[in-house]
Length: 214
Image (tube, rainbow, N blue to C red):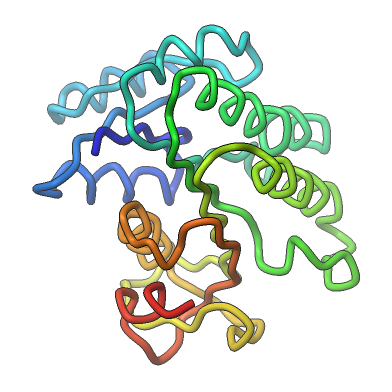
C-alpha cells in the first residue's frame, strides 16, 4: 500500500514513518508543515511533502491522489491553546477526511484519545482536546471511508512492550508511543480493525492477536 502519514514529524508519526519505510509491503510519504522537516526526511531517503492543515482542502486532495491509505497522527501539541487544537485536531483532521474521499483514498486510520467517545470520562483540564477528538472521530465514523480509530491511553516514551489490551477490556493505563505506531501500521490491512473504534493500552496480548480479535 502507498501510505501517507499526516503529522509525520510528531513523536508517533516519526515512528510510523520509520516502520513503513522498513516494511516490505508498503511505501510511505511523510506530510509535514515545515520545509526543514521535508529536508530531514528526504535526507533519509523518505518521500515528504509540505502541507498546511489550516490551508485548502484542494491542496490536500492533490497530495493524496494515488495513495491507498491515510494515517492521521497530527496534533497541535501540548503547548498551544484551544484555538490551535480546534484548527488542527478537529478541522485539520476533517479536512484530510474530505480530501481522502475526494482523492479516492478508501483506508483511513486516525489517532484519537482514550475514551474520547465518553464525555463523562474526559479530563477537565484537557476538555478542548477531548472535544476536538470526539467530533473528529464522529465525522470519520459518518464518512464513506474504511476507517479505524485508535484511542490510546496515556502516552509514554519507553521501549515498546509489544503487548496490548484493546477494546472494552482496556482499563485506564498507559501505552508506549512505539506500540501505538506498531498498531497503526499493523491495522492497515487487518480486516478486524475495519470500521472499528477502540481504546488501547499496554497489556498482555500480542498486537497482531489483539487487533485481529477486537
